[in-house]
Image (cartoon, rainbow, N blue to C red; front, side, top):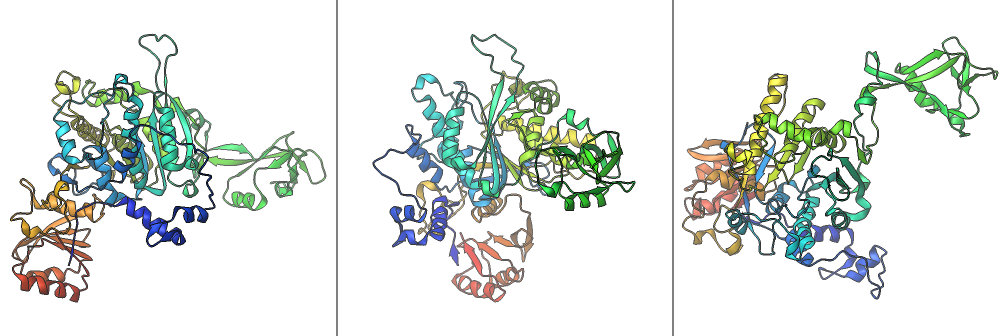
Length: 614
């Protein structure tokens, strides 16, 4: 039986093995020969010349923080969740750096789209000052203290922000799948620095665009210089070679052009013949009109499609012939044709590349986001400047797939989760969200405090509750839409053996009379095992009794977890007959050494090969 070590995904070893696969000749006695690696990729560096690089105080520690493993866990909180057994959505309370480390095991290379709205470093935003020894214990301690802003007077104003953002973005890249995107909202203060560290983390060749959103009317106190009414968005791909053509939804003005209707829905007619000096004969062929006349483009015009594509459109009833006394077509005898040709462009097929200036008429401004939240919370302004859901839905329409995982690890008031539910409803999609938010305390005198909320996470969860309820009331229960979420909370490992401060993979659990920490339940351990195995947190978990022992069946029996004691050979055989792919026991859960010795043979007899103990 193999013993689990309690640590999460090892990103450094993962990269090492990938490098080894790609460039085996660059490894000598299991070590990387950098000169040979440079030769392999055709890069010959003149070490006498300085290379371009962004440096700041603390960068090396920030890199180490991104590589650090953790024994932390996520504890389920069913009573704070909604539709636990049905939902695939995840809401996590905790420091996002530690949470991202934990999620690497279950979501490495699995997330389709990450949206974040991090602190803009205006001097008023709270920013942790992480250090290399930071772990979940220090995070829990810090929550008891009041959180302070990063001010210009501290001397490392920009460095503090870079040290805060760098490891989080580094791990976020690990979570993105090979065709995934990240979109980061940012203001003027740190745009240039964010662009530089993203070029380093994601690769400047994976940079897609900087967007600009005209997000404000510019009201309030008149500034001395310019009124700032915009925000930036930085867009990167995980691997630009794997991404597809990006398409944006049409504006309201563009949709108004689709005034005609057929069996496929609304459409508009687009000129099939257009002005172009090309001499390509593939787009100058003869077409037979309804009266038998054969026509082709005049000099200086061509068709929009080659003949094969036109014939396909004609068979699909997407070609429209209209009579005219003048136009861009001539007959086969060179006379002016009495016809013009148009192509039906249906609304459902109408897409175009998004523009770097985000269309304000489609996404609104900050006031729209504030108004939505106030409407949900009985007129109270429980969160300052939440993103409008129309803005987030616009981004989802560009970057999200029909069915996948989308994420926001600076969740705030849960605007992104609200937007995902609305977008899924409108498009018929089934994206699941993962939201992560630090449970920052709320001032009792604020609107949120007056409503009884103690932390930002309380606001976020209640917003998901209220927006989900509003959606269902609006569209009815017959619509299949996931408006639930599973709540997990960042905490130290449930097992004494895996405690980060005393971690020792050689140390036996038998040294402990009770391996579980005080206040921890079997279900806490079950989800810790799920995390350490790298299994999706939304996976179905069924609790049942077998021969009087509590068993957790994960993923329709793929994994069985039995954390009971005094297991006999009869218990083992009953479990073996379930034929799981994996099974986990307590190390001291067997009745005696005879049971422990024979258990493995019984399980293997039934085809169970992956047997673990904790």
